[in-house]
Length: 363
Ligand code: SF4
Image (cartoon, helix red, strand yellow):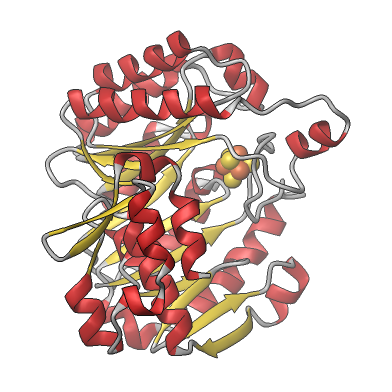
């Protein structure tokens, strides 16, 4: 499969944990100017349009664009007929008109940034929406016939209790959606939380409670009928994120927009992260990947999937026996972090939480 990722680097406010490429735009003209450059960049890939099967418009907050701006962007890619077409939406910037516009242009999957249903924790994260909005939006999306709805959740937020987490997962059940992405809060540099941490005013959740929460997330979502198919992702009735599966299987994807990266024709592409540079010439770098790096990526991303990586496929593709190339894998098997099942190397339940200890082997 081939995917197209489009980055919208604007937000109405900045969440305290976020290290994505984004900023609050000065005015409407700033966004218009960016969109013009973005559409120009998209056009440079028009030879690929026929073969693109997934589009993912992420950010930032794509849903904060005005109806006109959204229309301008959608028009530029309307000749592409993807199987999966996703846009990220933040509840406070959704309107019924935008929902109808999404539908009109063939968007069939919404990724909704909710993070938690605890209003106090939302405020702590600097998120502005109300729970009621989430319920109304999902009801509207279902009414207009956008069938695939994914919710982003965060757990291990300082101050979050086990009861809070169960409450969040109960709301997921009530919403009856097709997909959940659930990540633990990571302290990233250059964020407000990191600044607080340096001042001794931010304390991360202890690892035992975080592990307990992850167990609860896995058990509860599976009990609700979701399939756990990637470390942090859960889907009902095979409504996976096919776009993300491209990343996890080292497939081809084009990345456009500020700070976006791609993997096309064997080359990794990296766009500028600075707006003035991007506006001048989007791409910063485009490099062929050597076999060693490809193998590394294939193993690290592949192991994120619960189906793991096929040992025979790796052998055929790279002409190696991965246990000879990475003998430290035996130690990880002894530690109970990975196992072999039906020719596949997979993370164990313990390994799902401690995946980084396995990934280190390949770096
Ligand atoms: S988490 Fe999303 S909405 Fe919040 S600042 Fe980051 S990109 Fe913007």
